[in-house]
Image 1 (tube, helix red, strand yellow):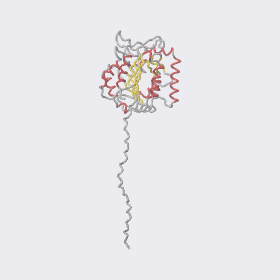
Image 2 (cartoon, rainbow, N blue to C red):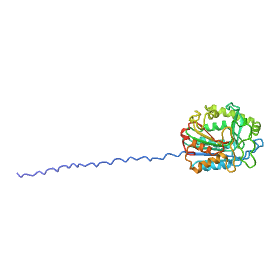
Image 3 (tube, rainbow, N blue to C red):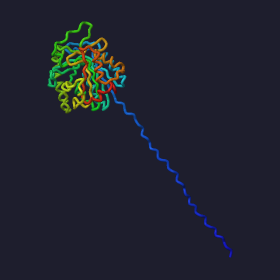
Amino acid sequence: MSDIAAKPAAAKKTATRTAKPRAPRATATPAIRPAARPQALSLHIGLNTVSPAHYAGWSGELFACEADADDLRAIAATKGMTPTVLLTAQATRAAVLGAMRQAARTLKSGDFFLLTYSGHGGQVPDTNGDEKDRQDETWCLWDGQLIDDELYLELSRFAAGVRVLVLSDSCHSGTVTRAAPPPPPPAGMPRPRLMPPQIALKTYRDHRDFYDLLQKDVAAEAAKAGATIDPDAALAQVRIDSPRLTGVVTSFAPSVILISGCQDNQTSMDGEFNGAFTGRLLQVWNHGSFGGNYTQFRNVITAGMDPTQTPNLYVLGPCAAFLAQKPFTV
């Protein structure tokens, strides 16, 4: 019997694959977006005259207010602000209020608004009892006055965290009519940016219903908003050397710094090229080379001015961080 060699069955090969290490899945690194630059708007108002039709035949001629507005617009442009300029007949009540309200609707926390006024300051009798001297101070716009109650109500409409800088080169004193009016300046000399008291009184009498109703409307609007604003009572508590520079009006959401051209018992003077206050401000700013904060800015401006005109600084709302910034910082 022949041995038949059994052919061994082919061993089944078991393929053993060595698993390749899987590369870690790449995780996309989110792009780091630079912080959005704050938005900045500015409004520059300059009136060399007003409409005699609304001011008892008085035109209030000045020399340098339009130049003030344009020079401050130039600073705003260099800082990246989008400016609006209203000169003389363009600076109507409707135009000014419209521009302020548009800015208040547009700007959000961290944004910046610059408001500058150069022109006459005036007064109307206070009818709502918010002024100790029974006078409301005003900016003399082309076709009517903007009373201080209106100005502060409009400023209060800005959102929390918006920084608002107001520069006012005018007379808006609450005490000037209680003192003897200054004598008219000699021919060719600078004149005060003050509506003469007799013109202020006649203007009010000619338009009494308008200004009385205006004050009532402002008071009603403030009450409706739940934020009664008494700016003069608040500002009276602030001094440039006082540590109490924040939270002056607790219901004021934006941070507002107002630098005015003179004290309450002084007048802001006009000039051949710029008003005395604006001209000195431009000199101190020196095309941006000034390196201090707002308080220092006011102090240096004041140091170089005639003692008969001393700029003042007021704050409304939380302003500690704002005051510490370099002026015009967006």
